[in-house]
Length: 119
Image 1 (cartoon, one colour):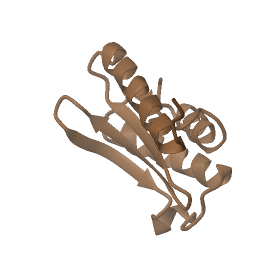
Image 2 (cartoon, helix red, strand yellow):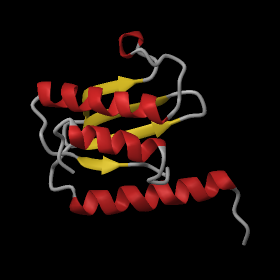
Image 3 (spheres, one colour):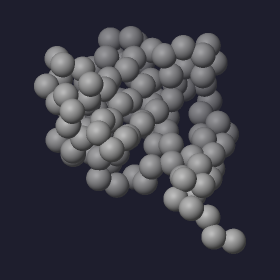
Image 4 (cartoon, one colour):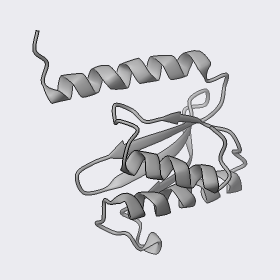
């Protein structure tokens, strides 16, 4: 049964989210979304259903508007770490969605770790 790229992405995302739910222990979720033009990340409290902090390449103050490369992802990772700490979040669980942990997603995660988030 041949699956197209979208179906494979959705299967990966569901598989990843189900594993995260099992091991989250009430920690907020660091959710990454990557498109062809932008990258965004949110710290989400799934218990309350609220977003605690967010960062995106669409924000002008980060200086990466319209860029979707590894350097932009690293800046966004550093920004989300700073904003999450300001919101009182030290530990998160990393939700890469259906994206592979490689390239931009990995750069974002590494920068967030360097910024002080633990996952």
